[in-house]
Length: 338
Image 1: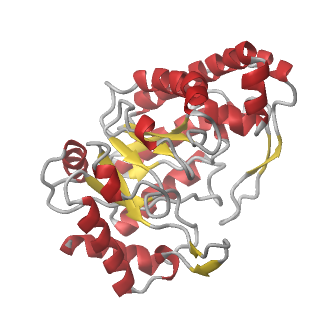
Image 2 (image 1 turned 90 degrees about the vertical axis):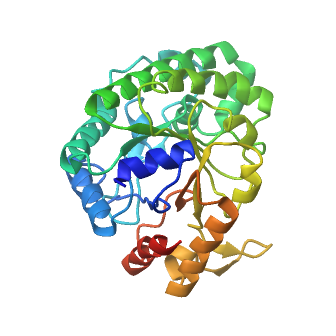
């Protein structure tokens, strides 16, 4: 099977010649220049012979053009961080305007897609990373969004409309660039952050409008509810064929998810350390510290509990940038015998 055929089979529950696999991470030494990042991502895919390329723009690309100040290091292991939010009071929401896809940081990520599609020459399915409108608002303003959605809901919804339209513009430009799908991440669909009613009103309503702009145009679409206490069952209803979450350390497990959804499950690899009940690290993640035997057993367990069909092996979120290369090679070799 080609990589595309393997992914398509996994997404539809068909037989695969082997379980597809990918590991993704940020490339913060390169992610401020789309050409450099494209070269790094294609070389990474070639080096480890993974089954798709998940584009890895820096996680704050969606808020820089809206006035957030970003501290940028351009060093491996040091991703950009917020230096100052772009929203400081409720009135600031009313000043947001719909942005074209080729503007500023958004435009650089469209260039990234163009360069990777061109350099990969169809050898890998390519998916672009996008964020839910509410997640973009959260990155732009921080936790004050909970106050603003309660005290000035109409003004906050006006901002979400603007962010939604900007995100759709970005989606359309990426489709024109040739991507095969989107990795849609939401950081706010968590029971410990919002009630389901609030998420339905301020999150899902806008999520679905973004998804409607690509669900029938691209085949490899993934939704990623980020964090703990996720609203898995609600997010699993979204119109995408695949769901990715931190299955190795939050509920549901892969086995439990099989009883909750018929979607393709993307996961099975623990990307973070293990902690005791007090939150102290007791050992590193399998990706970082596992022996060859431990890594193979880790994948075997994932396939045993998740099933061989409708499964793509991958981390619950980004892997560390200093994951040992030999461990990535071990993972790739291991799937040949699962």
